[in-house]
Amino acid sequence: HSNGIVIVAAGRGERAGSSHEGPKQYRRIGGKAVIAHSLEAFLSWPGTGPVVLVIHPDDEALLDVATASIAGRRDCIVVHGGATRQQSVLKGLEALAGRGVTHAWIQDAVRPFVDAALFDRIEASLADGASGVLPVMPVSDTLKRGSPDGVVVETVPRAGLFAAQTPQVFALDAILDAHRRAAASGIGDFTDDASIAEWAGIPVRLVEGTPDNIKLTVKRDIAMADEKLARAAL
Ligand code: C5P
Image 1 (cartoon, rainbow, N blue to C red):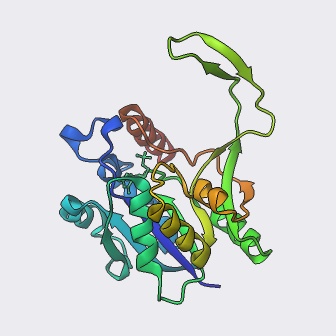
Image 2 (image 1 turned 120 degrees about the vertical axis):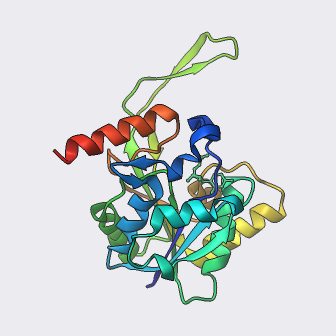
């Protein structure tokens, strides 16, 4: 099969306090832009085919600076995203259509710590016939449901519960069709692609994620990621 990669990077990153320092995917950790880490991981993996970068129209210059030194960057297809992650993914998937791609790998730009070992686990699952693959980590905290006024309502048993990571991988035809149908039906509140697959009835297999594969969400995550890489370089 042929793997097409969609890296979604069109968010504004309000939760990371982007107004002063630019969206978090362009902030530097370990001397490199956040988006450059996952882009390089994919470009240096032998299974990678066409790569689509989905960015905000205002971020063309930021992307150029962030990825200037990456070999293979010029071959990436750059498209503009939409108002939600879901819309941005759809635009990325549309850009993969007609390029001989059989499987779409959908990656959050703000997960810089993906690695080839994770790609290999996903690839093995695809080779085994999976139509959808989701990397996950078991949930380790005790989970509570709270009321709107901040009182514990109940404890949710965590057995069988997992936190979803990216890349999430699907047969391109199936996930593109699911995304188009969701958009046409006006359903726009999916926060990841495995939930769209679930809605569309595409079976999704779980594979073991990578503990380090965190999503940089708030400002503090970026500082912590930077420190981690600085320590690793010692
Ligand atoms: O906002 P959130 O943390 O869920 O974003 C996850 C990923 O989706 C980020 O890489 C972000 O840039 C991307 N995104 C996007 N278009 C949007 C919103 C988020 O590409 N409109």
